[in-house]
Image (cartoon, rainbow, N blue to C red):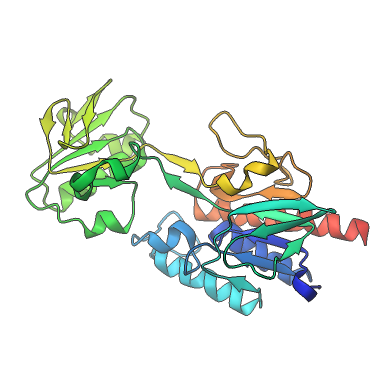
Length: 300
């Protein structure tokens, strides 16, 4: 294991399930990882998810925030060096090593391998700064902000046709919303969710949204919830010229998580290698860690 003078075996950017899994496995395989997380705490989207994750067969009844706490504990027990509030502005490759740049990196950590586990963010309707005061009635993506919303007596529009859209429509109804209307250009949600929503509450086809007026098809609402899926967080990695999938996520080798740039791996939702969830993200982390171990041992 080596981590002298800012040198590491691998730098992992992103402290969600995929990044933590990779870092812990690398450490326990005898290598020297550095984990960098842009926010103030470990957990990624889990940290902002107050719901129980009953899809995680190993932790039934455990909330997203509790999963995040366990991820942080795993890093601590594996003695993984971790930098929080470590926003990365750019990545460069020189002399076979990657360096990360940002306001928190005066020492310029470097490593021959780089793992991108930066996750995704919810797709919105455009620049929130252009929404003015009406932004308070606009909820983009799932999470704690939906739980914090008082739906009692509110007229709610839900935009999107996937699982998140219908699950949150049902959530608003269960929390006392006066009315909930789902607008879906195409309906892709699981039938178990579709069956729970009355047919009259779903409008399929094109629709128009006026964010400032909080209207959909000229119908006024108190709250508009947007569930247009996800987009990868990877702007800082643009200089690497990574190939992307048709959906815009980082393209990788299925067996190693290697990207089109030698020495760079992408795991978790930023690569959308598998159905996105905590369990598949953890598996992705193991895949990258084992691939890096094999590369390190091959040149040792």
